[in-house]
Length: 435
Image 1 (cartoon, rainbow, N blue to C red):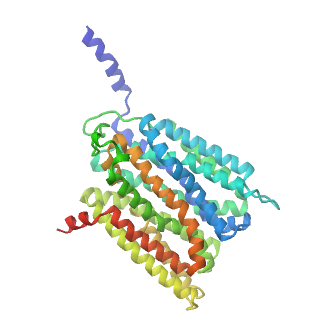
Image 2 (image 1 turned 120 degrees about the vertical axis):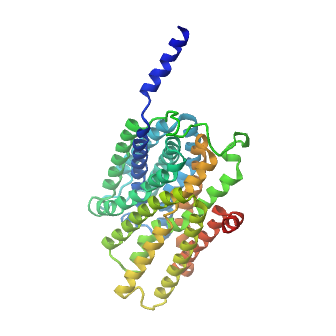
Image 3 (image 1 turned 90 degrees about the vertical axis):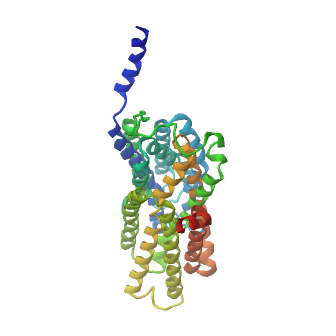
């Protein structure tokens, strides 16, 4: 009798557990959560030209403002990752998304310029930092959920789909926020972003659940590459190396996202409508290449080789962009002729797509190394590095511009790709792959 009664709770729990197919709903909720925050994170820089005029900023102050959200994310990513591993995915997502919506709502009330009145810079700066602090929860929590629900043969594909949320948000944000800022002002921008985050929180509350331990379908929480005796990701030099490489390789991407609109406006002399379309195409292209790369590397099990190829191609594209920018700034006609302006736009778009294509593959490699139970911490480490770069890149670009113009900006981006390759794919791994 005792044995029979002891089975009842487990049977009830099994009946209440979500089926294996629920993993696709978890993935969808993670994508929506990331996309909602990405509309803010990736979309606000797309309004840089309008923000510079509306808030009456120079390029140096604009760079500081555009980096502040990244600073907030960088400061909060690792704490959110540790909390995710301790509390679980769902409570962290709900708390973070609700807090982000609240911060954006406050910005709509107190940090938006109106007719003839510009708010103090502190309101804008403080609001963006707070949005970053709360929004930093989204990356680690949704990534850990994917690691828990998907097995090894699907994980790269699923993580790459999750990573498409970032360019998806940018693709939506570029035209949407530009139009809202132009016709409704920045109060409309911030209020719309707050509504998107609230909607994502409701979907996460509905669909995000902890995975049941179903053999052969969902990854058991206790398995992983990380040896418990090693003390976790924070004490693993391999995890730190890959996290640093991810952050450095994001620097060229943030150069495109933060100052790409200014580049196309000031040097290529394109109007805001064409600039918004160009930046949206960058994000759409990034989405497609991320999904393809996740599926392709899952099948071929060649993530290091793919990451190495992305680094080399990024280097060549940004060197080409530097050469074209140098010629245009020296009066060779590249920026003034319509065909040359379109050429600069295409080159920037292709470079932006290439430097955004590798995210799902790199994050999968990192999370697999750390193990499912510690994936939140490892992803928090990587995202801390990513958003340190997000903060520093907009600060550095105005100084590079004043020193040697756009050519130096894009050469620095190419150098970051070379440095990142040495961290993501060290020489020993490259030699073993070649042999």
